[in-house]
Length: 254
Image 1 (cartoon, one colour):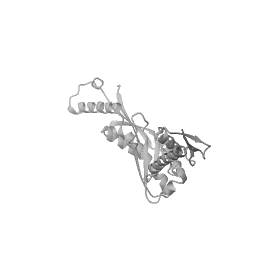
Image 2 (cartoon, one colour; image 1 turned 45 degrees about the vertical axis):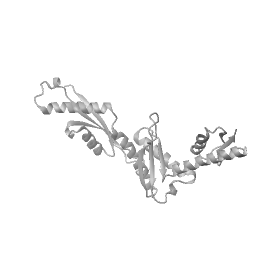
Image 3 (spheres, rainbow, N blue to C red; image 1 turned 180 degrees about the vertical axis):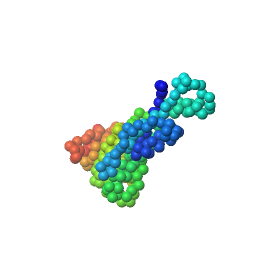
């Protein structure tokens, strides 16, 4: 007997949770599906870099001809129609569970790293609300708590390192890369405002004195803010000089 199968892949912390989640989405009992364990998952090393389990649930969908008889009751017709509806839904649009899983894995990764560092804080994750249709989906993580300066470090070196490590772990977990930005108590937004204000102030100084202004060494992301802030200023040019990690921006009057 030939058959067609509607398949659904589910990712969850454990195999049992993945199966339960898949059955809930399909709306069928466990004996109505064939379960294939694609990845049993892993707890990782010291709890870091753990990998979720992945299973495939296949729902058999027999046609009337293959059954050899015409349906005689409502139950059989409903079963066939329900299976077709599930298959159409899976193929026509992405499951929101995938997006939710991305956010949850990112949040849990940051939370676990903080626990290993003995830092008590609240972690939230969301997709960047300001991205346009052409930009790659990115995740914003915000850490809230008391006295979290230890997570920032000099020129955000600690924060950038944490962001880099989280990106590696999440990439391995999801099997794909996704841009992740981590902020602590709104530090990055405040720092961005300070850099933009500094750029405008030093540009005015360069215009007023007619002399180039050399700023203090900055990381590449902050130098980029200077260039962006002044790129439409008709009275000055900007350029980066020096070698890392002492590279700096020079503002040159025209």
